Image (tube, rainbow, N blue to C red; front, side, top):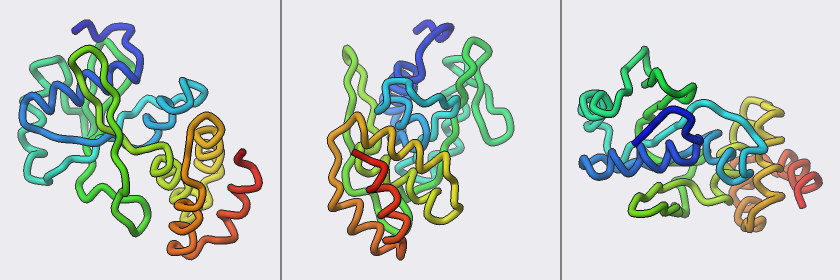
Length: 175
């Protein structure tokens, strides 16, 4: 596949499916999910993939080299794209809880697994809750505005995180 000029969404689908066909299962999380769910109203250049198993990290390097991605520090970069890949250790979680729902995007015969819009919001709110990252709050609001979400689930999770006051701020700004 041609990498030059590819969108973040299409690159995520391609890389995820390529890894899956080579025995490595991942789930996209982080800011890249925000880009996808907001249809590029937010910009991110890193694709955070959470690995299904920690033991596969070593084999990712040789697999990605075959499609032109080279390990540079903790990231993988490709000369034909500004986007870079990061592989996070399992388990896939938001705050103190495991992710509740993984969704899939299909394009032709390729598949990308990623956080649901609800868990994407929880992921962004975790940064806001625990590090006072206002940009992450803004990202959570953007995702809430354009997607079907489970607000009661986000509230339940927020209570468990001990962040009901910050949840109320999110709720007052989200649709």
